[in-house]
Amino acid sequence: MNLQSISLSSLNLYIRKRIFDLFFNHQIKANYCNQFERFITYMIVLNMAGLVLEHIPVFYETREHLFHIFDVVSLAIFSIEYVLRVYVAPEDPAFSSAKYPRLAYCKSPFALIDLVSILPFYLSAFFEADLRILRALRLLRLLKLFRALAPAFNEFLELNKNKSYRYKIYALVNETPTSGNLHHIFDMFIVSWVIVSVLAVIFESVQSISYHLHSEFIILDTIAVVIFSTEYIMRIYSAPEDPKYQAWFNGRVRYACRPTSIIDFMAIVPFYLESLLHHLFDLRFLRVFRLMRLLKLARYSGATQSLFTVIQREWPVMKAAVFILLLLVMLAACLGYVFEHEAQPDKFENIPQAIYWSVITLASVGYGDISPITPAGRAVTIVIALLGIGIFAIPAAILSSALSDQLRIERERMMNELYHMLEDGVISADEQELIEAEAKRLHLSQGELTRLLEKAKVEMGIEHAPAKDAKTGKGATSEMSLEFLSKHPELAAEQLKITISKLQQIVSVSDRQELSKYIDNPDNVTGLQSSMLKILLQNAAVKEQKKDT
Image (tube, rainbow, N blue to C red):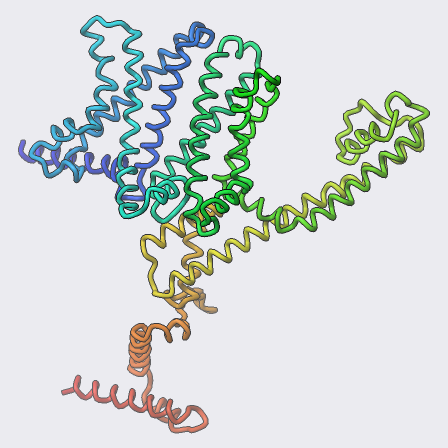
């Protein structure tokens, strides 16, 4: 019985530690901790969205059973999360030292939030309660987000403890060495609101949806504008922290003239213009410009930034290609007008109208609403269509090759940074984070990053590169580079010791008489090499004499 209880206790400890390491241990990078917390965050956001949609009859009345199923599934997920956290509390360093770790965890603020978000629904099975009130209590699940927000906020304050208020704002809205996880949460918050506001603009254009949700769309747009306006003000205010925009006024003006800042401004200005000038002008057409908020996502995409760099770099070539394209469009439009005007005066009434036909023909789209009927017009159409295949391909080819070249340049720049980081022979934790962030921006997988690191270490001479032997196919090792050893005398001494040890091993297994004959021939070795090899032979002979005695 005792053996059985011991085995069950060991199994319990193993399972508890395994669950903690897999889902709750932030010290282990290769586990599912981040994925689990991200999943819980998504469930919280979906619950809030469901709570809003339940108050819209057009969505809720015909899908009440689906909302109920989603609520039950969400409640089960949050309950399982709470039970698991209580179960692994003894493994958590924050509570493991307490006399009763699980009780200590249950009294913690986050545990109380988790419990309050699910407890009312279980109490309703024993006490009569208004179900509408219980649904409203799901708002408490928003507090669960503080589990990720509070540590990130404390980390941000610690990293920027001696910084100015303006620098803290700059570190929050821009990537800096002291930004921490709070900056990533801020970016995720802005990206989420961009997507929500753009979807709202799209659905608002649907008359049947806008009829029922008109007031909700207004409230949503107002909240989005407040958030984006606050973000814009924070970026303008903290711009002088960037060395390129240090001037108090001119620096902020130059920052506001950047393309990304103009996009931020255009994302909010239609709302203010329509609110302030609606009694003077009909500015409802400005609402469509709210879709420009989608361009705000370009700030958070490394690929988009690389594309902008490519366009800026290749702009002179692009201008030449565009000029040729416009020249061909105008020439085709003129020929189309000359050959088809008399046969189809309603479709080829003038050259501007023929430009439409010219463009869709060159683009090989051919909507079919305008097509030549004369033999000469059809012949011109064939030539233009064939030319269009190549002409429209020129800008695409320029961009694709330039983008590939830009990615190569950025990866070479990353390799140079790796060489610089490896000058001291090691990569620190901060340097590792910078490398991983740069690899993420360049869309490099973990395997590719590892391969680049190994390549850099081999080229710097820090590690030995595997080289296949011609006969055995097994790996051999290469020596450290002389340049690297010249900068690190202690490593040079270690390498020299290793080399001497290898020479001693070679001498010990070789025929010393044959070696002596080979050394005595001055054509085979230099004087220095002869002296060193004789010393090794004498040393080997002394060791043998000691073994014999």
